[in-house]
Image (cartoon, rainbow, N blue to C red):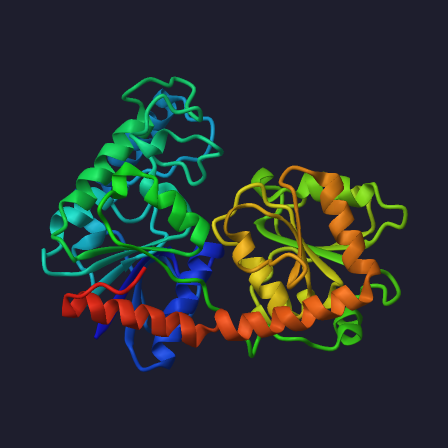
Length: 418
């Protein structure tokens, strides 16, 4: 059984990291797994890179198409990030796809041209679409922010300045609908990374009639595990006697990740904890409290060390499909204080692996952080339960076996239970 994952990156950003972990987990179980990516960040020989043809004619066509797509976005007045299901490569990226028995379309926006993909692949080739956010069943937004237009058909998008019935979102919705509708019955399966994302996907008429399963992310619990906290702090140069709160995101200043709410929560505390952060960019508000910003961490072992240096990991995301950092934290025995947004609740279980605060409520988040710092018995029970839950429910092996079961069912013609 040959599995081919399509992704923009192999190991950069939360969605791509999850896809790469899934790929490596399959390899560990002896499955022939490969990735087809635009940008390769690892030295994995099973990851193949698409290099655009250099001929003058194809290059000129690519540049023209890139500018045309950009012009469409500018003309639409898109105010927030919207994923286009088309790409500047216009199908050139599909000409030399490695052979596979099953395609798994991961986070491949801006690389794979979805209309061309679904037009070109054989009818008998099973396709799995692994959703890491909402863009597969909306007109392009990764998070709907309360909008329910995707239930019927997108259009009049609140995230588009020049909104109208057949705007950028409606046209994207129609292209996705046509692409998915063209697959033969039993040859397209949708996978969500959380129960929340699956529930939202089932509300979209775009996916009506398609099977949707939940397969949680997995992680290596031999890497993400409890370590000596004093040692972790010593390595990172963090005070041994101060309570430490950690926060991490691919982009620390991403408003959706809620850094401002975390700063407000910490500023209201009588005794300010030490804040440990990592990820791209540096929000100016970090200067308001004692902190250490580690920048972008590429090493999973170093990330595990950082999680272990903290008393509490804070996750004030306003919207989140799954929340991979929360899983990494509890696997290291660090309880999480989080807003109860989206799929976060699959890993952060109130008074079991952490505490959940009302979304947008910085004061409630502050209370959760303070309680985990002050209540040693609660902290200890959440720490132990987090490690247990991560190993029992979110291991790489479990993730891989669930995907293998799905792939075998698609190749055999029967659908697994959702």
